[in-house]
Length: 174
Image (cartoon, helix red, strand yellow):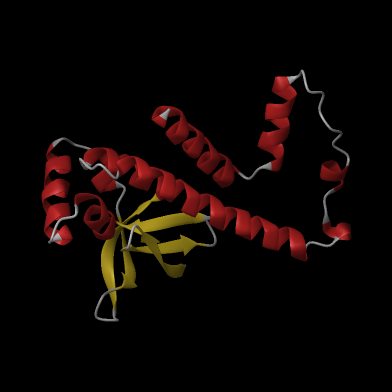
């Protein structure tokens, strides 16, 4: 896993990218701090976690204990959530920044996956490209079902999920 620090509106958000699963993990404490503007984001998460447990919310169950770089420079275990779970967490935190944060999370996820895809395409030489991809003709403009099937075939599932999340976020904001 590759550890990175992302910045959302001058707030540092610790993240990890799992190369194998092609998934982002975000530090829950950092997300709570960015959205709640609490002076003690760790305590905010502790209280929110207890409330979610009482409601039998799956977010706490979906938390992973991952080592991330702490402010003291050491790697420490912290609660982390995948992209889709972070988007659910945002709904639990009352914040004026929620909409911007959801869009930011989607952009972070899309950029990394697109970057990986471009790197893979750049290193793939033509002899390694599968024949079935070369043979796919351009779909007719009127046949939407064929376009969806083609997109599902060509776009990796993780990227498709992020694109759908982004579309949903943008659709709900309109």
